[in-house]
Each structure stands twice: as structure tokens, then as C-alpha cells.
Amino acid sequence: MTNNFIHDAIDRDIAQKTYGERPIYTRFPPEPNGYLHIGHAKSICLNYGTAEKYGGKFNLRFDDTNPVKEDTEYVEAIKADVAWLGAKWDKCLFASDYFDKMYECAVELIRRGKAFVCDMTPDEIKNNRGTLTEPGKESPYRNRSVEENLALFEAMRDGKYADGEKCLRAKIDMASPNINMRDPVIYRIVHASHHNTGDKWCIYPMYDFAHPLEDAIEGITHSLCTLEFEDHRPLYNWVLESLEWPMAPQQIEFARLNLTNCVMSKRYLKALVDDGVVTGWDDPRMPTIAGLRRRGYTPEAIRAFCDEIGVAKGNSLVDIAMLEHFIRADLQPKTESRHVILDPIKVEIVNWPGDGLEEVELENNRDDASMGARKVPFGKYLYIEREDFMEVPAKKYFRLFPGNEVRFKGAYFLTCVSCEKDADGNVVGLKCTYDPETRSGSGFEGRKVKGTIHWVEATTAVPIRVRLYDYLFESDAVDPSKYQANPNSVREVTAMAEPSLADAKDGERFQFFRQGYFIAGRELGAEYPGGPDRGDRVFHRIVDLKSSYKPGK
Ligand code: ATP
Ligand code: MG
Image (cartoon, rainbow, N blue to C red; front, side, top):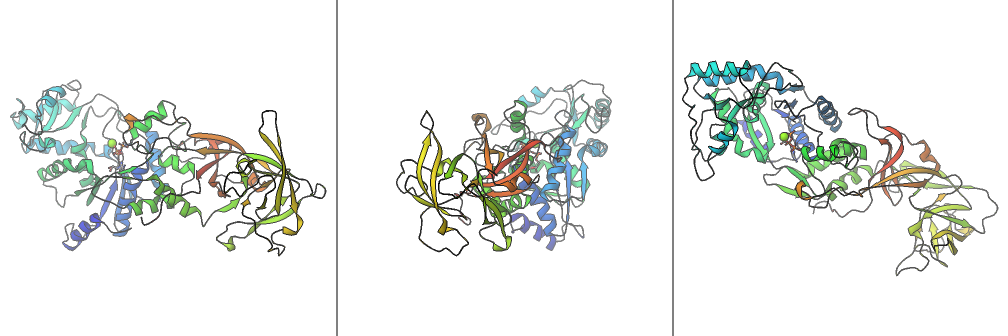
């Protein structure tokens, strides 16, 4: 991991022995209210990478203090995603396991005169909070005695009140310039079952009170979070200072990842799933970890991307071309090439002797001879891409047109003689001649041709289903409320492939020559998070071969 301002802070803490002999300890604290997205990957890589760098520890902690939005499906999905990314947690924990301890801490704050039970409604509290320029008004319940507060808080816990009838507030400063410090609510009444604790509780801690305690209980040293929590840091510190917590954790903020053509909000992504805009959280178009995995992204590529973007203190928008660069860079040296025709037209070689097939050799990876070659049939009938023929060639078009000669990759030179059309004028077939002297691999080094195209022998070709993806969102779709998902973001074609692709295994990746990187998958997503995909074979295009991103720019 490259160094950054967070690591500078940790280096200082190590030098000053801020945490004594304790290990550097980080955590990733998702709320289990949806699947993780690529933004979360940045946080996971940062937190886990930091622990790894310092020989420290890393926890996966579910921040499940809000009973109504959470679901165990999400818990399993998040675990599967974090593990897939390669982050190894020391402990997998639930914030709700600390509800007893948090309750005790709240009682302790009351004892210390630092919290009070308030009877104002949530609206009244909001309306009395003041503004950035005006202080708030103190609650009439602010000066209740410790005894009264203890009794009322216990009654809250025992279910004596309805939702919103009372709450527990920290007693800080209604005139603070930081609105978060104006006697914030720290416990509220919610009569709802919790996925972990069931009906044991009807009061639940608020995030700003719960989070520092979760960190402190686990012995977290550096609590890394995104910039929107900067204004909450004084409250984070207030909670731990008020309880005189020794060697308290410290919060450090970094910039959120925003990516072009992506929306990063679980809430919005959930709406896409619920509204059926996509097939599920793991739809290959989704910027979720599960979607990227199904699409064919590798954890290595995502980690390299996260390392490259680094951490900064200012929010910015990263071009998705950069993420695509890293998946190409990862796959290029390790995938084999295959010939696949996505939009076939048939070619007949009119001077081919008989119907027999020949075998030609195609290299598996043009940049790495050690990856060997494979034998592929070649014969009288072939498929080529429709776009590799033009009846009337455009300027600088070097592929097939009547009278022009091109190299058929790894095989012979062919010259187009004529094209056949259907009643509507669409080209349905080509007639060509070949020159037997031009076979590659036979020592032929002869004349130059300007175009090389790929092909598949027609009688042995296997039809495969291929899914081609476009972005779900326009480039700057950062604010989801303004954008509609692109309904034409997936297109399925039946392509003609060289025979070996019939034996592709689930999860196997290939470069389809000139067409991009593809993964052998299934038409439906996993039945359970991290499980195998279902249904018939489809190939997903991971990414095409064109790149607009230049590393180091
Ligand atoms: P969302 O709005 O998508 O639900 P969130 O911040 O509410 O995101 P959490 O589950 O609370 O999601 O996030 C877990 C951790 O991931 C937090 O520490 C959060 O700061 C971090 N995180 C979330 N989104 C991003 C992002 N786009 N870039 C970097 N870190 C992120
Ligand atoms: Mg959240």
C-alpha cells in the first residue's frame, strides 16, 4: 500500500506510543442494509491494507444498530464480498452484541450528569436545534435530576412509552457552533424486532453514540471513515472523553470514492433492484462487488485500482476508465485468446479443394509465447464479423471489400470476389478466393496486406450466448435523483465461437480476439450470496479492449 496522510498519523502514534503496546487496529463497519459497492471496496482495502501494513488487526463489524432496515441476507452477502476481496478479518462482530454495554454507558453518562431524558417530540427537537447562525433552545427537561433521569431511562427500556414519546439526549451545549453538539439524541424508542436481538430491546442507540463505543470496545485504534463524518468527530470524542475511556480510538476521515457512470448509494441501488431495473444486486451492470464479480472483475484488479486512487482529504470523481484499465491490466497476461464472431456473416472459399478441414495454429496470448498455441479448424466455410466487410469501402478501410485481399489471422490471405444479399439488400454471404501459398506457419513471409481479421470455421463453430454491456448511468450520474438508468445497458447476441469454448468452465476468462475480455458465466445470479450462478451458459463481456485511460496521467 502506498503511504498516505492516515499512515503518517499512525506513524506518529507509534512513535509517541499513543496506544502503548497495543496493535494498530482498524475495522470495516458496514450497515447491513444492502450489498457492498465499489466505494466500500476502497474503505475495505484502506482498513485492511493499513492493518496489514502495520502488522495489526482488522475487524469486520456489522453496524446493525438500526432495527428496521437490516436483513441477514445482507450480512451473508457482505461477508462473502469482503472475503472475496481478500480482506481477512480477525473477528466478525455485530454492534448489536454490545447493546448491554451501550446501555450501561448511557446510564453512566446520566450518572455523570451528561445525559437527560427529554419528552420533546422529534419535531420539537428539530425545531429547537437552531441554525448555523443562531444557537438552539435548551430543552425544558434538561435539568432533570440524575435520579429522575435514571428512572425514566429504565422505564424507556422497559417499554413504558411509545415510539418518539421520550428519548435520551447528551447534555452538551445548545450554543455550540457545531449543530451535532447541541444536545444530540443518543437513544430513541423503536418498538421493532431486531434481526439479532429479537424483541429484547425497544430502545436503540443512535449512530453517533454507538459508533465510538463499538470502536472502543473492540480496541480499535484508528477509526477510518468518510468525510461526511468530519462534523461528527467532536461528538465521537465527547462520548469517549465523557466516559474517560482510556486510550480511546481516534476517528480520521478520508474522501469517498465517486466513480463516473456509477451511483454509490445502497439506498439507490436497492431501489434499482426493487423496481426490477436490474435483475438483482449481482446484476453484472451493478457497481456492487457482487455485480463486478459476476461481470468477471478480479479482486486483484479492484485492489490495484483502490491502491492507485489512494486516499485524499478532498472528494473527487474518478473516471471509470481507470477501473477498466486495471481489469485489462490484470487479465491481459493471464487470459488466453479465442476467436468468436459476435455478428457473423458467412464466407465461402470458392477455390477451396473439396470440403475438407485443415488445422491451423493460433497463439494463446500474443504477448507471451510461453502460453502456447492451440489448433483450430479452417476450411471452405467461415464466419467473419459483419463489420469486417464493406461493399463500398470507406476511406482507409483495409478489411474485406470486393477485390481486396486481407489476412485471415493465423491462416491464409483471402480476396473477396462478391457478396450475396437478401431481398432487403442485407449482405448474407461472401465469396472469396484464397491463396494456398500464403499459409502462416509454412514459412510464408511474402507480400504485405494491410488488414488482418479473425474468423471461425463454420461447420465446427459453436453458437454461444454473449452479453454485451453498456453503462447503467451517464458519465456524471453522481446525484441519483437526477438520473434514470439506461434501459439499453445489456444486449444479448448469439455468437459463433471456435469449438473449444463449448468446454469453458464456470468463471473461466478469455480474451475474445479484438472484442474484449469475457467470462463464462450463467444467465442467472447466485441463489445465495457467494454461491454458484444458475441457468444456462452465457458469456459476459467484462470490458472491451479500447482504453481511454493512460496510467500516470
Ligand atoms: P451507502 O450510502 O452506500 O449506504 P454508507 O456510508 O451508508 O454507504 P455503510 O455501510 O455505512 O455505508 O459504510 C461502511 C463504510 O464504508 C463506512 O466507513 C463508509 O464511510 C464507507 N464507505 C461507504 N461508501 C463509500 C465510498 N463511496 N467511498 C469510500 N468509502 C465508503
Ligand atoms: Mg449508511
